[in-house]
Length: 111
Image (tube, rainbow, N blue to C red; front, side):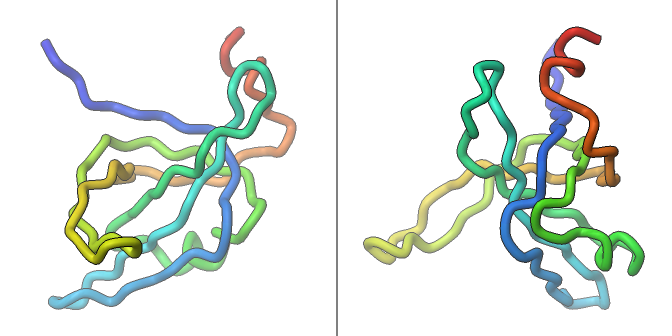
């Protein structure tokens, strides 16, 4: 059996973006940065959440610790370098919540 499920504990990197899509749905897009076991920062991970409530939109700010639960999705975007269409991996969030800053990578791994 295959399972496409991701849980991230990281911090919001950069300013979030809210897009109003056709049909009245909103999409919250932001980047999350996580740390590896050795403490090094990993590349940022793009996250998008459909139809978030206003409180969540107002809470997602740079540096805020978050939990993200969702699935890996592929998104086609135009490359800034060559202008060609490329696939990027993103997280399609099913749930985003704020987390206490006291949570560390080690405590998550050891739990």
